[in-house]
Length: 97
Image 1 (cartoon, rainbow, N blue to C red):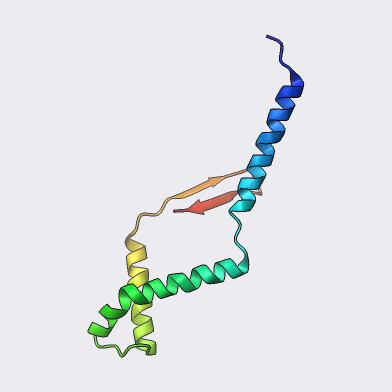
Image 2 (image 1 turned 60 degrees about the vertical axis):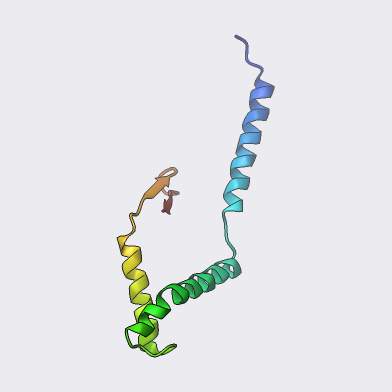
């Protein structure tokens, strides 16, 4: 079987370009990270805020915020975690689910 090296080279270039584009698409700017953090905090307050108020903490007090953070961290600790790492030595990329 004779390989056409130009076709192989073109295919490899396309694969490398797609890989680079997919890696760049996963990057978040600092502004996007800040927006995500704000959404996460709003969600925590919506989920755990009423429970903390029922426990007797006044809404929007430091104790209430501490209760919300405590309940969220407790819920996150109970979730199973999976970490996947790949890449050459010195440039390993890890993702935790």
